Image 1 (cartoon, rainbow, N blue to C red):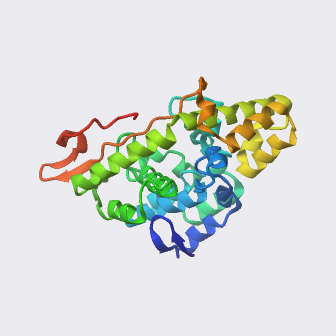
Image 2 (image 1 turned 135 degrees about the vertical axis):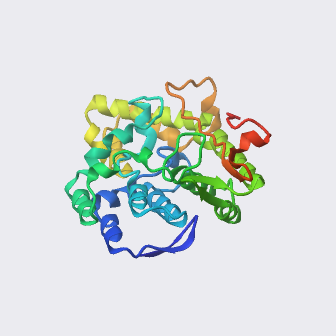
Image 3 (image 1 turned 90 degrees about the vertical axis):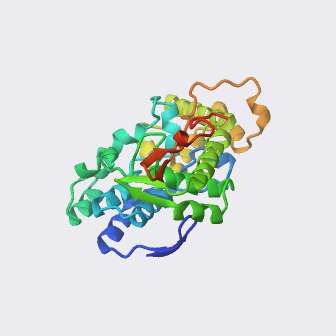
Length: 306
């Protein structure tokens, strides 16, 4: 399996067992789920899919020397994302906005996935909890393969970074004591600042709040009318959008129209029910004294909203 990845360039996966897992219908479903959720309806250039990101996390973990089991965990980490990704978190609200994590057993125990996982010598239960894999998942503000890949992938799509800068970030990464770190503080500062820009202008922006809250309202109306069910969310974006459009309901149609034709003027006086999750990083740095946080070396605070 060869392709040109937007982050890592010319890449390949040649492990037959991994390729068989990727080929399963449950994994292929991720091709139809946009990482940007309903925001991709307003900004078509935000075309990263959960399939692309999942392969990317696998590739990054491989690049960082992760063990085989953690490689598979990276490949499977987003298997349970519902249609339009985090849009569901604006209906079933939680502080971490991670509704999909609770659905992992449902997806990993599907017959096609269970058989593929068993053929590699594991059980679905081995991949329920990503937190046991230190290179794959770390709480904010640390670095992990998941956070780094979606940062690089989304930043390239939104033109916040260039391919050359993405390569510079990747080439400066190292692993010390199962912890991903930067070797050069100046590169870490660049990454921190671009990450903050993505948070401010995209992931946690006012426009993102508007789009996600309006789309959640459209889905609530779809549930009320009976054209949408929780099971529909287990499909992909195109299916859910078709369900909503099939209602020919003025409330749904109006909200979808304003998302697909988003203009900043729509934010005037707008107050969403749910606030998008804020993200920030304070990268570990390799120093003569061991690993230290970038914030310990001075500079602006690690967490910033704007």
